[in-house]
Amino acid sequence: MTSNIAELVKLKGPISFYEFMNAALYHPAFGYYSTGKCRIGRDGDFYTSASVNLFAWTIAEGFINRARATGLWTFVELGGGDGSFASEFLSYLERVYPEHSGQVRYVLVDPSPDRGAKLEKGSWSSQVDIHTSIEELDSIKKGCIFGNEVLDALPARRFTKTERGWEEIFVEYRDGSLVEVLTEPQDEADIEIVSEWFRGVPCGTTVEYQPDLAPFIRSIAEKHREGIIVLLDYFSTTAKLGQRAGGTLRCFAGHRLIHDPYVRAGECDMTVTVNKNHLLTALEEAGYTGKTCMPQWRFLMEWGIESAFYKIMSTLTREQQIHLKMAFNTLVSAGHMGEAFSAVAANKNLEPGP
Ligand SMILES: C[S@@+](CC[C@H](N)C(=O)[O-])C[C@H]1O[C@@H](n2cnc3c(N)ncnc32)[C@H](O)[C@@H]1O
Image 1: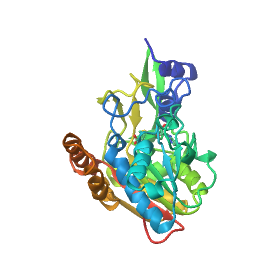
Image 2: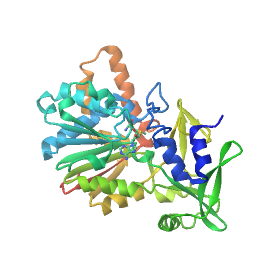
Image 3: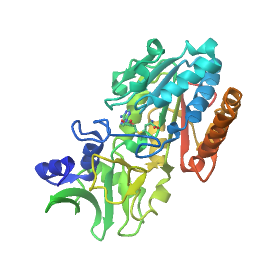
């Protein structure tokens, strides 16, 4: 039996990997995110830092301190999914900062159909706005834009260096399954960037390029008048990405890595490592200054993970305290999420740095 995505490729003829990944994640009828199949956490397909409640508590702690110092009372969460992070963030503020929690305006942005589902019945409805895209927002006069693992969900083009030069990976339907074919690149501008970035890599190297990344940052900056932006993700430099001969594409279902991206398209997560240099340039071109990049453990320390930890610790039972200690380790230790993820932060019309 072939999947719906395979049927789609059969119908349209060979399509670029970018179109394939876009359909596998966001096709309105078959996409993993757009049909509500995405499950994050223990019973889902993969974990993110947001699966750990101490993560949202720490961001809330760091945000409130910055809001008190700079007056940035709007918090915009990009890729907020079902609102799990948002509900932990808001409940932390209610518990620990009751005098400020009502001042915060929370904006959740996500195209998936279950966006903000966990928030709709909560007590915060008057201070939460839920949107499908950044374009829908009014301008954010003073605010913090935040996104965890949203950039790695933007579709990627894939290119392979051959004896003939850079060729683009297309996906074709053949004898009941999907196969990759190399074709001449379709977009001159993209291939110019890729050949410049990865000049000198050996033949056989496959790399990814996310054409929507810079436009996404631009669309955020167009709305963002003043404040800070913080994006956490799997990042790597152009130089290191050029050393990964097979590229960084990964698919997950039920916490297992799926080696063939074509067998469960539309039913599994599909992600690539984000090019840090690409993001830093996009931020600069969009008018952001004071850019920093640090491992997640250090970022969480700077944003107050220890304060959040101790503030909550004293309210817990012995059993819950053990879980909180485990959560702390998961988020900051190098062997877990502490070094697998990094945070890129920058300012817009705001001094000093975040
Ligand atoms: C890997 S999930 C991460 C979800 C959550 N932030 C977390 O850390 O658990 C990526 C999320 O980004 C959302 N997304 C994809 N493109 C987006 C866009 N252009 N704007 C906002 N959210 C987007 C997806 O729908 C999905 O919910």
